[in-house]
Structures are given as C-alpha cells and as structure tokens.
Image 1 (cartoon, rainbow, N blue to C red):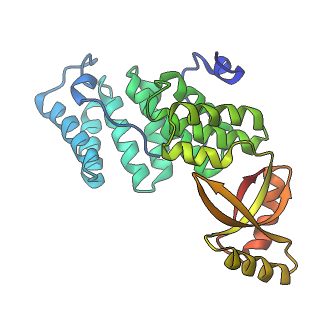
Image 2 (image 1 turned 120 degrees about the vertical axis):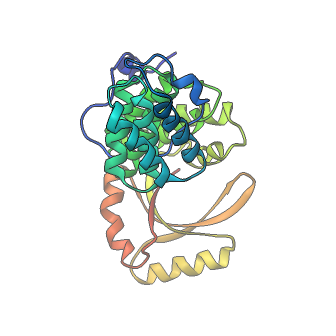
Length: 278
C-alpha cells in the first residue's frame, strides 16, 4: 500500500521549483532507448549516443560531455534527446557541476517516457537536492523515483535509505522507520541495509565527533571535549556485530536545533557531524 506521500505524487508530471541535487542508474542497453524518435536520426547521430553511453560506463566524462553536446547541438528536438541530456547530466554530477547536472537531468526527466531514465533522473535529482540540504524537493523526487523502481532491486535500496534520512530531518520518525525496515527486509546484508540499521528506531539528534574501536580512546576524546565545557559522552554501539564507541554531544529534538549547535562544536572538531540517536 502506498503512503500518503506516494498517493499525492502519483501522476505528477515532473520536477518543479528549485533544488540541488548524483549519480543514478544508467544501465539498459542503449538499443532499447533509441527507438521512436520525432525526427529521423542519421547513423552518425545514433553513433554519438552509443559512444556517449560507452564513455559514461567507462568513466570518461569529458568524452560524454563532448559527444552529448554535439548530439544536442543538431538534434535537441529528437526523441532521443532525453538520452543525451541524461548521460550529460550524470557526467556533470560526477564532475561536481551540480547546477549543470540539475538542469540536464530535469530536461531528461520532463522529456522522457523511458522508465529507466525516469527512474535514474528522479533518483539523481533527489540525491542532488538531499546533498544541498533541500529536503522538501529531495523527498518529492525520491517518492517519484519509487514509482518507476522495482521494489526488490537496486537502486530501490538506496532510494528508500535516502528517503528515510530526509524524513528523519523532517521529524517524521515513524515513516522513516518504515523506509528503513523495507531496506532491511528486502536488501538484507547490503551496504544500504547496514546504514539503515544505524538510523532505524531513532527519535532525536546528536552531534558526533568521532567513532573509535577502543573505549579508552573514546573516553579520552570525551574528556578533552568536557574540559571545553561540551557535555560529551562515549557511547558503545553495535552494528553488524561490531562494537564501536561513538563520542557524542547533546540530544536535540529537531534537526534545526542540532544544526544550531554544530558550528560551536566544529571550532574544536572540524569533522563533527549531525546523526540521529536513540
């Protein structure tokens, strides 16, 4: 059964508004993608798309940008333009051009009727939004991605994990747990399931300054922070059968409250991060 969010987003035509959003699923044979165009394509134009996908799969982002841009310069209105925008957007993401990636992936998503591109673009846009802190748009894009995803196959595990993280930021802990539980059930033992285990059943936020294999090292760090008037504690936690000692400071009801405390703590520990806590 779909949640209220999934029912609300069903049939939504595509992304709207602004957001910043990674790399998604590029992976069905290109021959499946390049049929049914609105204008005839020359063999040379088709070869540009074939070469673009091969370059993306091979990690040659410069070649992807060159070939997809060459295709779009001549065939921006072709049915296959969605493919070019898609691979160019994914390569721009890998090159950390977030605004360029967002622009191309939105073009791919709004133009396409190919399920693989709908899924991959929605996930990538959700990731870009999540990474930039735009939780509202990330939530919408992840729910849209789930409409095109196979519930028991990748990248559904990654989508649901990230969606759970977004919901925790909103304070919707129960719905976040539902997403994490699906990951744990359908993708047991996967990296996404291991991450979901760490975040499930949390109800608050804390600032974490380090994770240690040895208790004495964690206690020493907590003592150092305590001397600076920060109420740090070394918390033993076991995930995947491995015990580690997490040094954490404070318990905050909301993401924003924890975020307000973070800058002061980072003056002593630049790598301090916000994490949910039980």
